[in-house]
Image 1 (cartoon, one colour):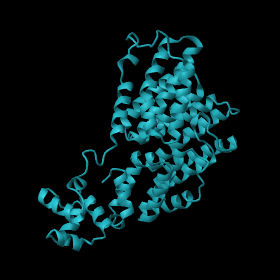
Image 2: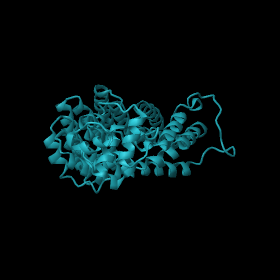
Image 3: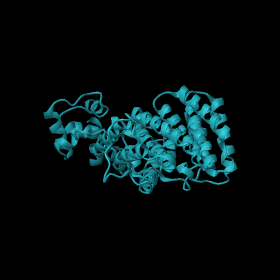
Image 4: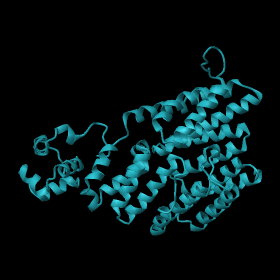
Length: 398
């Protein structure tokens, strides 16, 4: 509530001394209120502040959901949780529901899987949350009902659907549920026998483990998974090279956050070799892999290792326009994070506002963007920045 008071005060152009005088208090008291070091627990005081600021009491108190995810996100995650924990997908003898007595059409499922993956790369989380529960159910049914070659195809689609679920849930901070999705997807990928899909789900496993707080385990998994893929590699396949190179990147990040410079460097160098072999930026199996993505992760690794100036220098020289929207926004957040560490709040804010133009949905829902904006609000210059306060309101942080 204190941050809302500060934002409305700055918007009105009032100093702390003036506003405090209007409500019969001291500037020192108001400063503590705005820093959330003094509680606003009397309705009469809140009403006086609201009147002085020309707003309603509810504007200062905020909605019940303020500071949390948008309501539609809550509903979408809840539906996805129900789909992932549906016992009928786990118990072989449990009955399944089919429309018209026929198993789901694989061509339609393929189209829907591609649509969900494209939505992820466009940072359309709402669209993903709306589509994934039903798609998970249909791919589970297909994997139960088909046989032979069609069964392998159904398992591949089930794996990719689970991967899409794991990716969006990680972005939203639902890390426990993301790990469940990644694990289910990896099991389906192994049953499909498709090495590229197996590699893709191994990457999701590494990323989910790391997001779940299992840094050393995710680093170890990345190394073992890369070794496994190397034994099965078809170096003439851009799809396999892309999956292999992309798998190494979350391993590098995980190693860096554990302070393991050697492993982080090795993963990056091996990934760069794969990118050079590939020859250009591609998007096989939605990997967005190539030299640009490796460069993005090189800057992120520097930031994770505490080499902040190096991260800024590397990051601001990368042209990410060739990458999908999701990757462009993610890089902007990483660069903003580095700027905040150097207390360059205006530069950090510029990165986030630019990214918001690319995808307001990713900025408002991504757990990392919310952490960065919250950290900016705690800085001395951030507390006085009306543009930052307006962004925080749009994100429902204040």
